[in-house]
Amino acid sequence: MDELRRIVMRAENRWTDTGLPRVAMVQAEACANQVYQPMMHLVLQGAKTLSIGDQMVCYGPATYFLVPVDVPAAGEIHPGGPDQPYLAISLTLNADTIASLLLEELESSESTALSCFSPVPAPEELLDAWLRMLRLIDRPGEAAVLAPMIEREIRFRLLQGPLGGILREMARPDGRLAQVRRATQWIAEHYTEPFRVEPLAAMTGMSVAAFYRHFKAITAMTPIQYQKRLRLLRARWLLLFETRNAASIAFAVGYESASQFSREYARLFGMPPAKDAATFKSPTGAANPHRANPAIYQN
Image (cartoon, rainbow, N blue to C red; front, side):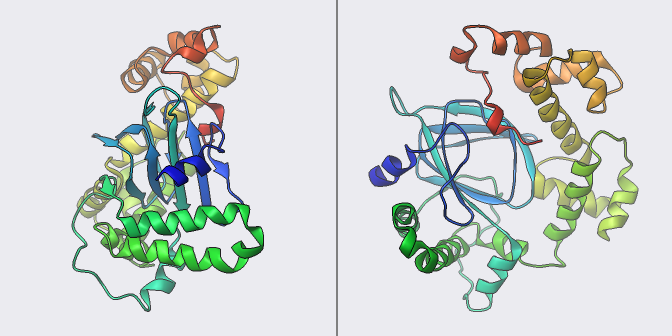
């Protein structure tokens, strides 16, 4: 863990490219508001509290979680102490790389029905593989050959762990997770527009009841909540980094009522839009725990 932390201390206050395929690292000082893409996320130092739908989850050092589909989340970063910033690494996941491993992998009896967002202690074997992976940052001549092998080992360790069943479901092109992924992609592309759930359920090939059930099991949100969270995350980015007022931003992201936008914004981010923007843009904003990092936000 100490060596992993020393390597990741090189990262910036944003997800930083390591030069290794699908591997990124972060040294964060800001709140954790973002749209998480499919990934494995491993915390090395400090802690992160995330609000995902109606779940509030805390991740401490040497724990990991999986994101099976794009998921909008809000939360806070907690440093490990003085001069101990939050440190984490991630591996982007896709169905093809998982499916290729499933052809040879023997299913483990350890897989459980845990939520994919549940914090899971990282076993020594997984940390060891990650250390060998990050050492390749300084060995580009070896990385082309060794990085794919170590990535395969990391995926194997994940498949053998408590969340292995979620990875197996990700690899099924006709599974429920793939069906829900199609729905989340549609909502993300049309998040400013009103929609009815019935056509969305039909698009995924599920009944409305089954669609609701599987969508919430995978994202921890209903489809409408998912859309609302996307709107609010985008609205906050616009509010903090553009010059438009709160009302115009509310209408731009799809709200029909500025007052409703203000209430829901304050509920998620802890203060009304105008106050949040003023705090962020003030000279002392850098010391405020709600200060955001533009690189954390995804358009």
